[in-house]
Length: 429
Image 1 (cartoon, rainbow, N blue to C red):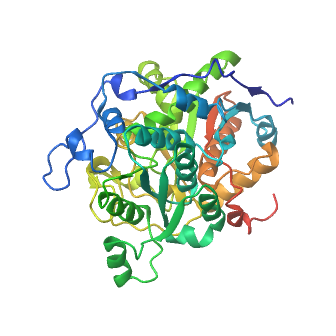
Image 2: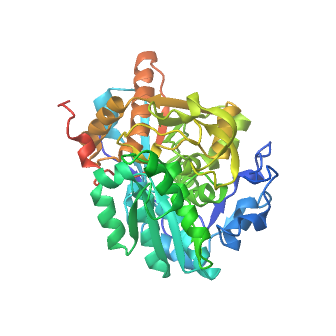
Image 3: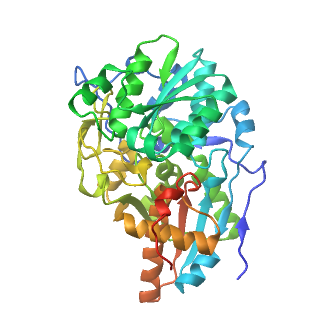
């Protein structure tokens, strides 16, 4: 069967981000000051983020936020990204389901993370800052922000979860290529890191710990801001360029989705992919939205829906979200980008409202799904993205069992060329 790619021209690419908070029928619970417990004020975030991003974080009125022209030109390097009809996967599964995937692996660093990295670097530069610190789980975010920093003339300092720092050298090399500096976390360079290492010198690290390292370094300098790759509202808003393109592509192909699937760690690729469709799901109830996460870090399925800190050192504001606890240290699974104890407050609320259904997957299943996808579609997916592939395969098999003809669309959030060691021990299909 012919493999169809649905593309958009540069002129057709959306020129605004979608702000879901302006349309939701409920309000998202506010962030709380970690010291006072009171709703945090915009000026209290000024020690971490530039004014432009603080304004975006608190914006609940404007449905569309214009993308600056200079930033659109950078998006044109790799956007619009293609929507692909996965005929090879359909044939292999012998399913009546129709399967499509949005291919975000075409970005300069191989993942969706560049969408918000460029935006955050641009607004920091426009607001007069010269340096950014950040955390990274498996290295996708750290490499994306380093790329964006080079584009807009910012220094970037990355704190990488130690187990990934040790096992994913390719991402470290990419960060260096884009002039970023990368350190293992917990770090000897910070008070928070030294305290953890004193108690556990061989600590594998976690995203919560890496956030503490990065935030601590940011607040020490007036010309430095912190940059987060997921969770926060403005980060997910930047990613909605994915879902907005997808809507146009589906309309162009006259395709109506029945099921939307994306993996979830903090929630950025998931939110960016599904947010433009959420009001359709709320109003019509005919679109199922599935959030794929690892069984080893089952935030949405087994976490508590409550206020919690975003980092281990309790430096960040408290957020109402599904959480496994700020002190949670997940096992060293290959999907390092999904090893976060919490999730986006907006995504968490959608799960709590029953609009989004979590799907938890074991590592063996997602690695096998990645192998199937690699052989049928010719793209090696990142271990994180393989969760969405695995959930898609589950849904396609259900269609085969029931005879239902559903259209399943998932987000391929990134390729796995830097994660090949994860697939070393998979047997033959």
